[in-house]
Amino acid sequence: MSLAAIIAAHRRLQIQSLTVEGPVIICRAISTARGARCPQCGQWSTRIHSRYTRRFRDPPWRQTPVWLVVQVRRFFCDTPGCAQRIFAERVPWAAPYARRTTAFTSWVAQVGWTHSAEVAARLATAAGYPVSPDTVLHLLRQQPEPTRATPRVLGVDDWALRKGHRYGTVLVDLDTHRVVDVLADRRAETLAAWLAAHSGVAIVTRDRSGAYAQGIATGAPDAQQVADRWHLLQNLAAAVDAWLAPWRPPAMPSHTTGPAAEAPAEERTTPGAARPESPAVARRRVRWEQIQALRAQGPTVRAIARTLGLDRATVRAYLAQPTPPGPPPPRVRRRLAPWVPRLEAWYAGGARTGKALWERARAAGFPGSRSTIYAWLRRFHPSARRPAASRPAPAATAPPWLRPACFLPWARMPRAWDRCLSQWLAADATFRRGWTLVRHFVTLVRHRGGQALAAWVRAAETSGIPALAQCARSLRQDWAAVQAAVTEPWSQGPVEAAVTGIKRLRRLMQGRGRWDLVRRRILHGLRPDPWTAMER
Image (cartoon, rainbow, N blue to C red; front, side, top):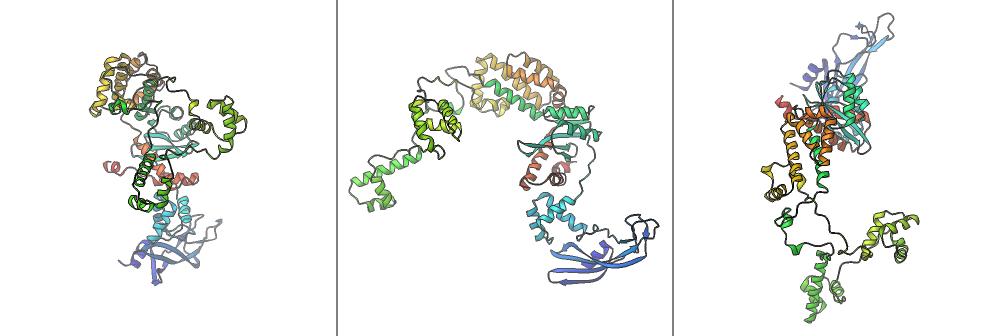
């Protein structure tokens, strides 16, 4: 089918001519409609007042730009009392006063939703839709917001408009995984107002935020709240950290703490031992020894430089040093340099601690930070610190791998960890009790064993471990949502996926854009997972 036939069939136009003028196809046509309706009163009119020409940019044909030059008419409105006496004929495939067809605008907008304005403009121009980045943003702001039905199962989470300062709220339909709406803040009143205006929500999933819990209870009191299982495990991880912070592994002859503990004792450095030589200093020392050994044999500077592949100036510099080069002297920061004489005077006067030096420097108007003073004291006066013999030995703490081991299945646990845990479980009853509680909670969350939650909370409260008891009390404060989390199949996964998509869109926008553009980009640009759509 020819281009003229396609245009005539889809636009209801009578083609008069189709010409190629340079790199552009010009299609001239007239409207075939017998009349038009008045935009004010809706009355049909066939009495023609005059004719005029409109130009529309149409989608390209084989990457060649296409312009439609259409002759439309003006009509009289004969309805008595109508304020519109003369009106122009409307075409169904273009907006009033527009110079682009609806198909052209829709294609550019689809590219603009998922790309930045600059990239969308380049892609559109390469495909035959020449537009500027400002035009892309203008078209996106003109698009209406999509209307979505009120979901039965709603997911709620926050996302950062400006991290640490301003946050919004995203609402996701967990049945279709589509973003329903976005709110400009994360206050309970805003969420409650939205839920009150959209009745019909039966289940709401959320994190452990108290503001969201209050907003859901106010706006949809009959809806069932479901806490996020990942956040339950996160709360447990925080309790495990607090429990293991003061805990010390039992001392046993066969005690090992993982691969790092299997290193020979002579390779471990003590707090008072000298620091090992850096690789750069070692290379310079070896080079100095090589140059001195060759010089002792009698060769010239040129011969030594040719043998070692060095510059003669480098060889002369090494020969001028009577001793091997050592580490470079510590340097003083530029901001601290004018204050060094005062610090030295204060140090000689008895201020030997970083706190005393910092208080005097701050009183004198020092513009730097406290860490700068402490770093200067450690570099230039290391003797001010207590000797290693007088410092208390560091307490034995839990190894860093113990926390992830609390959440790993036994089948995936390394053998070295298994040996340590077996010894500690046999030697320490308190550790055995806490370890059992942690493993039971992880199991009931992962396998949704809600019938065992009440027994676990009672056992944690009477375990004698303050961190786990506090975790159990926090679960009681949000009992209905926590019970539903370990019983119902709903998850916050689709909501977290929407938050990740919002982050990607924000990176495309480079963190800029007013709220109206950000909102439209989220509602139009985010799409559900295609695999989930295929399954449905």
